[in-house]
Length: 360
Image (cartoon, rainbow, N blue to C red; front, side):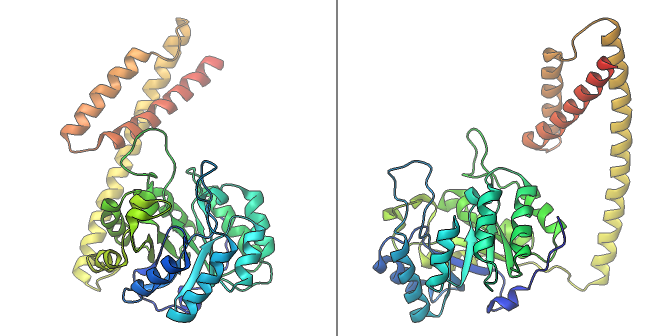
């Protein structure tokens, strides 16, 4: 990721509290619903009020948002409660309308981040405008697309930027609505350490009972804030009812979070941590040596198959390796998901090496 200029959250007009809380309904449904949600959130740690005005839905003929009329309600929220306001913009026209009605912060959603053409159109619409912009990860697990969105916004002069980790689409049934893939958010933070990172537990979870767990994980990873959907009557919500909670439940969730320090200022702790990290480094070296030795055996197997005109892929053997590995991993307390990922990567590298030998 190209180096970009990123302003701290203190320049957003916010208190430096952690977690910095963004909350409000998935969708602005009625003026009464928006205003009452904002009033009830006023007694919580919320600093930014969110509401979807335009809703990018998977299927047509579902509720796709109120549109421009709801921007007037957000302006009233700011006037009556003092909250900063934010909404999602999915194209240049949305951006112009949101700016016209005084929305304080914009966010680009996951379905938009995935399209560089649309992100560029939004960036062009913001050229010369001093406004904070948050960018959700693309729906597919692609850090480069996520980085590209920030680079496009930075090029037109936007420096008050933040990332929102809302999880990634995955095939098949999973525990979450969107797989967290925390390592991708961590990788973005590694590339751009000054970029504020928010977590959207609502979209990762897809259900209210997982919000606390996901929020705590985000805090343990030192995310700056949370975006949590709240509604005065979640069961009656016009969109994403299962993942919304009441303002009172938002307050309880934040109150029950355990906030940990980056550095306890304890020399004993730091010395112990350094010793453990050195042990990790030693084990990593051993692991690389083992993998190197394994791949040398793989190359010998490739030569043997080539000499005997045998296909590379032997499905029965791969099934046996997986079964043995997952059983051994389970006995050692390692998750099946982790084991599958590791051995699938090793298997793919083995196939690549044998393919190269076959083609030489």
